[in-house]
Length: 255
Image (cartoon, rainbow, N blue to C red; front, side, top):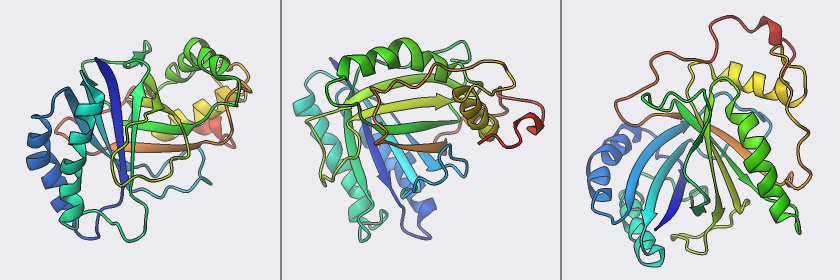
């Protein structure tokens, strides 16, 4: 068995958002249940708050499909026709070439921190489409596994991380992928701005918490994009956060 995650980054046709949501939560989710190895699927909308506000956010929506596949070369392609139903119905924007489907073989399942309340849903996720510096593969993964994943998921509001590598198995329509390394971080917070500001402050050693992250490994390429999304699918939404209950005055000037 092998863990796979497929990201569907897309835009929904204007004024058909409710129709798309009904399709995803109804016939689409029912059809997914018949797929071998299917574990779950969730929808997210791009957040108004981003850690790198200058990076373009070309996708308004992200759907995440998780699998534990007995035979990936046989099972993963079965997802393609189910996603194509929305495209064929005109629910997904295709004429601007923004739609992307990326499948990753995951290195492991979620790795949680003490912040994670496992009986409560995620409020959102962030994804990094990243890369390692050529010749420094092992160093990159050692740093992420032993250092950075711990630092990131201990930031209030960040609760878990999982990572994967771009699979040779990809769904149509295939498009260029800017990152062969996926870093996905799960959030549980109703104050994403605080989470992002404290993350940035810890990375620069100026957090009011007094916690400073280790210097970023030079094995991690700067050829990466970062995208934060808020959960929009399902009936369980984040009913109050754990991130912060005060104001942000201590973070003035921290981005």
